[in-house]
Image (cartoon, rainbow, N blue to C red):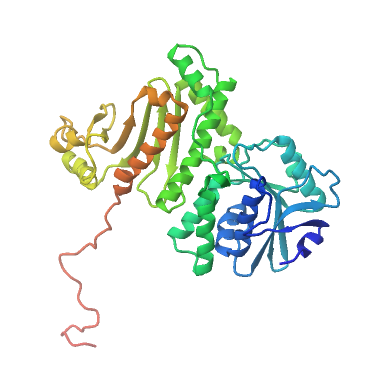
Amino acid sequence: MNLESLAEIKGKGEQARLFPVLAESSKEGRTLSILLATMSHVTEFADAILRPLGRPVGARTKVEAFTEVSFEKCSDPNSRPDGILVVKTGKTVWRALIEAKIGNGKLSKDQVERYLGIARDVGVEALITISNDFTSSPGKHPIAVDKRLLKKTELFHLSWFSFLTAIKLLDSKETVEDSDHRFVLHELERFLLHPSAGLQRFTQMSPSWTEILDRIRGGLSTPKTSIEVSEVVSSWHSELNDLCLLLSRETGATVGLKLPPKFRNDASVWESNDCSLVAEKRLLKAALQIPNAATELEIEADLSSRTLRIFSRLSAPLDKVRQASRVNWLLKQLEGSEGEAIRIQSHWPGAAPVIESSLSDARNDPEVHSHPSKTMLPHSFTVAMRMEDGRKFGGRNTFIAELEALTLEFYGLVLSQLRAWQPPAPQLKRDEVQPQDVSAGADGDVS
């Protein structure tokens, strides 16, 4: 690797190194150098990171990475991006400036906009920021910038834990064939997990969490336009994105949020909707999609009752024509699960009330989920687990800890065991009289 890729845009820098020689105080530079060096040498890892950005990396692609970059067109000595990635596929070249923050370091609007301006001036196609902030996708940035700066320059954001998640997924799928590359990835994982690397998971709600809960308990209003509600929703969204990464690492599959297109395309619309939900219904809600799971994993935090509920909904099997048969179809799937902590709801047509019981009660008494009218059949079921400890719900740290623990427990005990009903394959219709073999003549001889 040489510096020609930088010279083409009149830039200078240092090749990203796996073993950077930097001052002890330069933790940020060290961590980024090791990360970028790994991306430039392990094709599968670079592809896992850059493909979601619209830049797939294949066998014919060359990835180069540099740190401590500067440009002739930028005279401000304080405007030095932390690094740059150069992705070459055939005659196509795509470059992205890198700005990274570790630990409690925060990205600022001024800095992000300044680097977007540099990217535009020197002819770089994108800016990638890396920090401990979590977003729903690389294209959703935690900083709202002047949109005019995005006309010619793409802006992406990656959390540090997204790199760990990528390594876990590559490992679980055994995607990396080269043993040396696998070794490098495992060493990168070990390094990133060490406290000195500066990675932080999302571990607590904002200070406004306790204030909003106290206002609700006191019967006071919580306007959807208030700063406190906005901060709570922002914390909630960060935790959901971190929770998806956590589940991805634990399951070895890419877990994502189920969001309507209008929310996915505009984070401000999603935030506004959830602010209204908190203000009007005192709820926080979400749905997670796990590949090949029977249905979504849904989360509901009731701020009034301080109750956390994790649940999944399943349609009842339509080929079962008895109430007990439909209920037993569900119970059989949960045979290995502890029955006291799991709740089951059966949903019935029309105005018939929902029937709820523990899994244990449903096992012990088949009549619990029945209706006096035997022609009435449940059309769907909800299986749930709850956390009803108001003290833990109200804690900024304990709320996050309980949410993550309950989500993992629910997935392991319930959702991973469930299978969605599918209608049986159609059967051939047999006539009472089989048609004669058309190859035979009237007298039975073959013609």
